[in-house]
Image (spheres, rainbow, N blue to C red):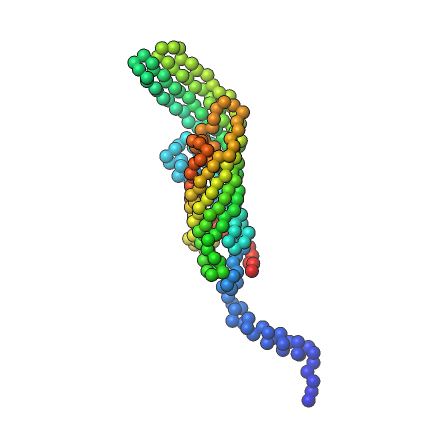
Length: 243
């Protein structure tokens, strides 16, 4: 009986071992349970445009980037700016002879950065095809802005009016956020989502006497606690697979 060559045995053994893989040759790797596309997503927040419809003194823009660190953990960075330009006329009457009128203008230009992590409640190994997100996140926020009050007038019905102007001052602000977010895939690699955010102002230092009317990325400066929202559109850029 003729002996088979070592090369023939090598080819035969590898063909036998490869037979179980043949049914999956034409399938995408996402069909294998436990595998998900590694990706980077870029997006834009529509909330500043919504705010503009009812507060035309504020103009802003925010873009975001998201990277999947693990199947359920995402690193997130959000970068943007906000400009404020408004004037206010207010009259306060205590009695017939005590009339006080306030007229002032306020401008502010600043940018901000928010960075943190998102944690998905979905279990990718149980639902390998589900790309939606329902979860919580945490952010650290920092903003830098330049503000000034170009002119103000305090009118009085009894004493003479007082007028003046405030010079430019800089403000550095720090805060933290707790985020609850939803995100779903509208079309292939296109996502829409929204989030509610509880924000706590940690520090807001300024070189002048004027408190900021609004802090970029944080919102109106009404206290150390506030609530914000985002409504974002994202495009996901898949660039690889991982187990």
